[in-house]
View 1: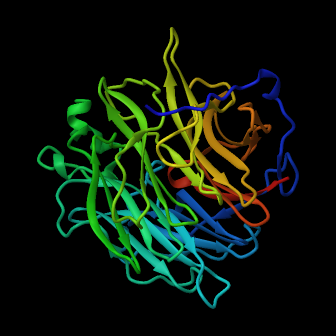
View 2: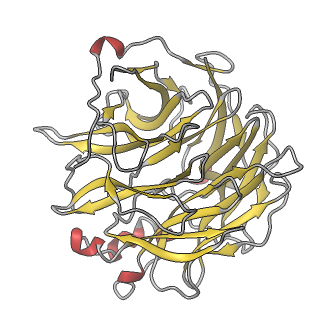
Length: 432
């Protein structure tokens, strides 16, 4: 039985003084637009190492979607022109829950880190691909395909992390066990949903979580577990000692869609049995399209945030936070105060070098999709306090915010607009 630390949220602390402020003023909406001429941009992800920041995103025109990376060497104040990553034009199949991913690792003899990017591609089959830049994002090596050659079925919702040796570790959701029933690719989301039988636990047993590694310690793809909820993002993070933490939404008996976690302490060669993070008991015969996010601090504590639904006469959505040091015991979930809508969504999380935790999410408020951040702090006595929420794009609709911590600030990235009018924006926030 998992031992739990019972955390109490004191009502009096919910309106604490904000410990997070905008770099250009607490109410400033200044941001940097990341665009490719003649294309719409969306589905960003961000990573940072000291003052180096890399943002990857999808840019779309009539020919399809490609993956680009823009980098900053001044902690997100300015960015380079975006660089194309994929080699086959228009192949990227992306979405808010399955954006391209980017990760960084220090490179000997250079101020710039290596940059690794992961994305979902659709050709004759759905593929998970990764490519690496060894010159700070200026150019990229030829992409490497991670799944087995001609693997059947659909796959997607990948996550990426780099360990201290530069090995790129990846996980993704894979439907090869349901290949005979599936006729659409993961990139056709949400249209592929019609081909996925909504059979709860039985159908989930045909969907797997897969893992592969590329780099100095390459590991061929293999299945870690079955029973995954197929359309929710996954999370993968590496500790300073190389420990890998993988999280996803699992389908448990009774069609309960709770978070699960597995750990590898040998560089991805083996993983522990999956452990339930929190018994939220949300039963739904379908995928919520909303998964977990995770970050590991310098002491080896993994911080998780996820969305779920709270049962009752009028069920409502909530975003929750918990931590684990060993991957088996978790603190009791703490609810993150949001802006008051019944369905806050798409949570993300970052931890800076001082161990400060910031969560981001979006929700519909008065007809506008609002992307917000706020700091989370759990006291030694179990009391949780929260900084004031910050609206990342005042007056504009903003979705799918993502976060990364530099050596002097926090960088938030999100999408505004939709379709051909969508644009990726980045903004710096100062942690006090």
